[in-house]
Amino acid sequence: MNKSKFYIIRLKKLVLPLILILFTCSLIIFSKTNLNAAKNGLILWANSIVPTLFPFFVATELLSHTNFTYYLGKLLNPFMKPLFNIKGEGAFGLIMGIISGYPVGAKIAANFRKNNICSKEECERLLSFTNNSGPLFIIGTVGIAMFGNTTIGILLLISHLLAALSVGIVFRFWKYKGTKNCAGNNSYTQLSDDLKLSSLGGIIGNSITNSINTILLIGGFVVMFSVVISILQNSNILKILATCLEPIFTTLNIPTKFCPGFISGIFELTNGLNIICTINEKKISINIILASFLLGLGGISVLLQVWGCISKTDLSIKPYIIGKVLHALFSAFYTFLLIKNFLFFNFDL
Image (cartoon, rainbow, N blue to C red; front, side, top):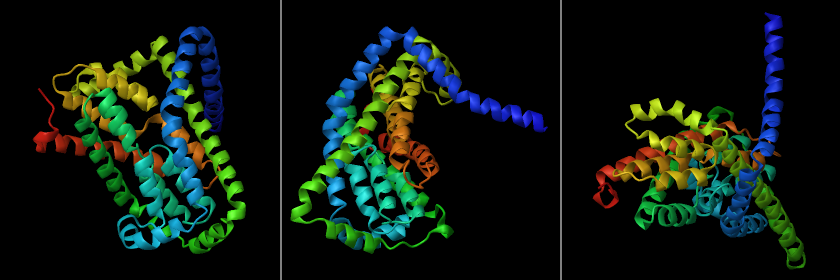
């Protein structure tokens, strides 16, 4: 029994190195297509992610040196505490997570924990539902650019926000008995004292530096996962995974031609959504519901971005993973209800 356990432990230790060796070999074998995939990932990062997220990163860094979040917390505490079991200051993470997109919500939760603004349990609850796709991405990129319809973008945004709030309500019970109080007010007072006209230049410089580090981290994940998807396609692994998914899709009455795009979306959101949205189907509600599910899930690429944001804190990634699975299910369900009950949102031929 002890010997078998020993071999299992050794096997587990070898899995990650073997995957990395295969990945390195695949980079060489499929070098031509990987180069194009990396370029496309870099273009996507430079043209879409940097312009939309970088200003938000700088803004949140600067706001963390003011009393804005403290006063917002006092104002919204009657709303945040009963619904989400989080101090009012958490409203800042909720609002910024809604208007800015992945992974701003996670970054704010990590900053709250570093500055001891909220307890560990509160920050984990915050992490579970404030890291969302932004309205600019949902309406602009998915609705207008991919589906070619603004109303579809609005539908996806409504279901996405409803799902996020639903997850927050569910997670109010996360480690309910283990919640500890922390002196958030002292942290804000200390931070606000640091923001003076004489030190403004230094604070802006530090905010830009921290934001650049985060945006580079995101860029690295986008490029890497563009290459990973390229390798999976060229090695037919994506096709094999899609074949494994076909029985589930058949049971749910979803055409199996959506399987490759759905698998791609699990790895990297933007690429998967692009495939899902462009598949011709008379019942376009299927495309919309699957897109809604993927938007809620975020994908492995976003998961690793979030993991990177919280890596220097004591926060667990577990509530985020559970929260995103619930978010995906809620989002798809709300989209289905809106399509079936409101003719305005029914695009089926």
